[in-house]
Amino acid sequence: MLYEQVPLCCIRKLQCLKMVCAAFIFLGISMISFQFYDMKLLYRCDENHISHLSWLPREIGKNLSETDWRELLQMVNLWIMQKEDFSKKPISKEADTDWGSCNPRTNIFFLKIHKTGSSTIMNILFRYGDFHNLLFAFPTETHQFKYPAYFSAKYVKGFSSGKQQNINIMCHHMRFSFTEVEEVMPKNTFYFTILRNPVTLMESAFSYYNHITSFSKATNLEDFLSKTSTFYQGEKQDSAYAKNLMTFDLGFNPNTPVSLKHSKLLWQAVNTMFDLVLITEYFDESLVLLKDALCWTYDDVLSFPLNTRSNISRHVLSVETKEKIKSWNQLDWQLYIYFNHSFWNRVDRFGRERMKNEVAELRKRRVQLFEKCVDNQVEPSLLKNKAMVPYQSGSAKILGYNLKSGLKNNDTLLCHRLVLPEIQYNDELRKKQLGY
Image 1 (cartoon, helix red, strand yellow):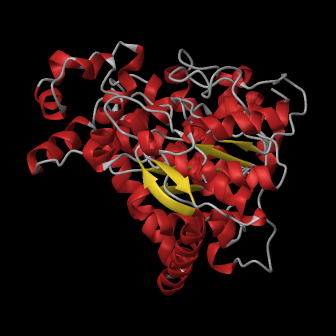
Image 2: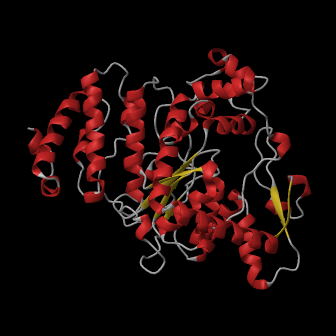
Image 3: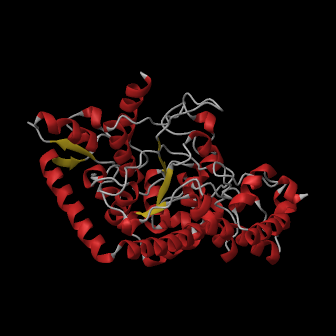
């Protein structure tokens, strides 16, 4: 019965032995997963429709046997083994790639995870798409894809199921759902995201989202962490900001029981879905890897930090508080540790000396561009152009930039775009592409 359900494409692409192993693994979990998900997704293993198990960690209950967990991990590992053979997303060969031997990637999906420096990455994508006349996937409403609800293809402005979409870049906030994203994006899309140390992420999130239900009654972050059972309300829609925020944005259940097997499944599922995971703490190294993977230039990834807080908004954390944050956000912490390690493995493949040289070049060009464009970075009240005020939230004071006067005509547009806040840039691009 199982073989009758498997598409012929899989049999052609997988070696016989691996296909038999996959069949037994699928059979082992079919009774577990059937009640949680449409079974046809498990067998959509042709080139256009690889199921990446983004749903498993949030859907499957905690009472699985050790055998069940082992089989689930084996299935994910099988997909990872086959990724280079029949994945719809080609793998970048970092060390062998240079500007003369590859073509720039223009079909790109970026999962914009909250409070990770993702607004700066978004500005890079906005500028690249803007200057190369690429098409963006815009939300039907506001500036997010109905976050914190799971993303659905119908949330994309102008989306029509079964119709060629011709979308190049998707990068607005969402709660990730791979199968819905692939309904919109071309099959050769490059998928990437960014992670941040959960300690600094939560300190930032508490400042930025201190109005949400779980945070609003706590006097400070330490107070919240000392009484999470009192303050945290996981059933509330806005609770995502208060616990395992990265896990939530990636589409998983932030309240999943903490265990090594849960974490391994989460890591491996993310590893199958994304071609590159950047790390906020190594932002410049991340930009170099991104530049290389997309076959872009230094100028394409140059950026100034956006959506940053003033020092007054920052809170120094004690060692005890840091440990409490790690414990409270254990899924995020384990996720960060895993991908921090894999990030540096990728740097090793890229070449440490090469990385050092390219980071130095990137920083040199950034300093030169900053000196050309920017007068100063200031609090909102000191911005000369009030149309450039970034969105303000919670107790955080989000800084903006004053540009230098007397810029040459060929510098004005670039400098303006480099410091244009996220919402204002979104509105300009939306008007350019859609007319309103």
